Image (cartoon, rainbow, N blue to C red):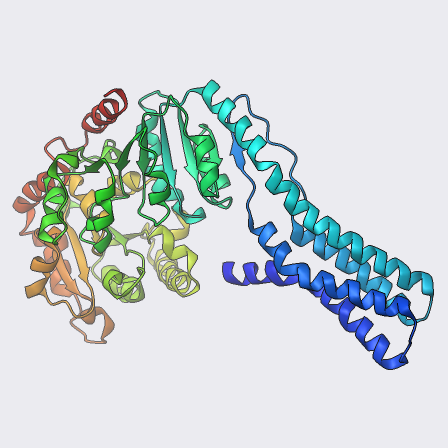
Length: 506
């Protein structure tokens, strides 16, 4: 859907001018008219068409956008060159049609309009470029007056809301002024919904200069993107990588993390994961801070076998970027949910936030919701559909569950804080024997090979679900695993807050 919308935005401004050129060429060919004015019209229209790539480039430069910054007033937005082109094209096309009927004034007006349109399209872009330095100066002045102590950075587009949100809440407990810095205009409204702090969109590298002010002591990065290296070059600040969760996924030990001054990790396991995967980073860069997002997580109040019926959180991860990160069991989730219903469980369905962005993934989500809705209507069990708790805090979902089934990912590690049992669907081609070696986070997990869910075998995962929901033989192992991955102070955000204060004050 997003791709189709972008293509439409790209093509729509071109249509009227293209139609005008076709009309005029047809007019000249059909009438063999030798009047100079018609040739002038064709020449000017051709110049407009040739100028379109220049206008496209000028229009692709996003304006410097700022929200919620005291002392700064966003200037009136100039019309985007694309829409100027569209409006001029409509006029040109209409006048071209009139020229077909012969009035010389229409042909002359067409030539004049096309020329004016060319000047306006180019002028809008040039005005934006020439006015950028002054605009940067106003942003810098307002930021100096505001005096932020740190900046939270993301270069992702609007799909980064959950990655920003998980860190903004604990950071705001510091009661220090800060700025959210994004690199795409699409991300501005998403970030502005998450915080009342200023949000700045610096889409070009020179724009970054106006954001860095003397009061800023640290920059925090909530994800790993190529554009991070543009901001980490500002050595007046301490650059801290936060990431968006601890897991056995490939991005958890990316070699590019070495460019940051500090790497905040949840527990000792994350620190050990880098050298185990051949990534050698100075150990002094690592700071164990726990997971401050889990401060409201509640431990299990009773053994899972005593829950009637047990409430099982089903949380498949996203499909991933490539073959190494393809760990999602979402296509097999309908079968898993059917097995859970057969086992007498209530299901809380929580797909990964990114899964809502893909058409195929949304179809799987809808099919699971339909299964749960039908069983709820039939038997009265209180299933919780994906659409019913899409925006809820993940910790709240943890608290109302008795167990969880998920994939390799950060949700698995976060769930350790609850002490409740959890199952993991193994990716394609990974057997139970090799799983623990490849994915150390599975040491206390009940393992479900995805192939069991992809076949029509009658047995299915019934034996694993019995262990997960009734027998729970791994109960004694979970506490040790949780400390290894989340540190000794489970559910405590003070190690994180103290570490941030040290970074800012040192």
